[in-house]
Image (cartoon, rainbow, N blue to C red; front, side):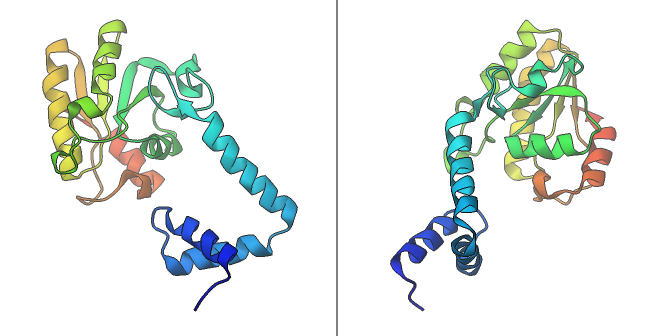
Length: 198
C-alpha cells in the first residue's frame, strides 16, 4: 500500500528507531496524525529539547541536562562505590531497583573488535582517572552477560587489580546474551545483592 508522502516520511522516521518495524512505525505515525495539533507540537518540542539540552556528565558520562549530573551531585550517594555500566539505559535499569546508592560510570559502549570498538573508543581512561583521584573502595561491573560484556569485564579487571580496590561483578540471574535494560527490577535487585568479587 502506498501512503501519502508526509505520512510515508513519518513512517520512515519511526522505522529508524530501534526495534520498530514497518507495522509499528505505521501504527505510531497514524496515531500522531490523529492527535490534536497542540499535543503534536508538545511532542515535537520534547524531541528538540531532549536533543539540544541533554549532554554527558563531566564525571560519569551519564546523559543529563546538568553537569555534574543529578546522581553525581547527590550528597547522599556513596562516592566510594562506582557501578560501571555500558550505557545510560543500563544505569536507568539499575536505578529502578532502588538497591544501589553509589555513583556510576557509563562506558558508552563495550569492547567489540568485530565492530572496530577497542578500549580507547570507550570511557575506560576516564574511569581509571576517577579511581586515582577519588577514595574509591569498590568497582561494581554491571555489564551485559554477552561476549562483549565479558571481554570488557576481563579487560577492566586486569587494569583495576593493581589499584588494590575491591572489584565485584553483579550476579546474573539473567540468561547469557540477555540485555540488562529488559530485566525486571527483582532480578536486577537480586543480581546487585549477590554480586561477586573478581
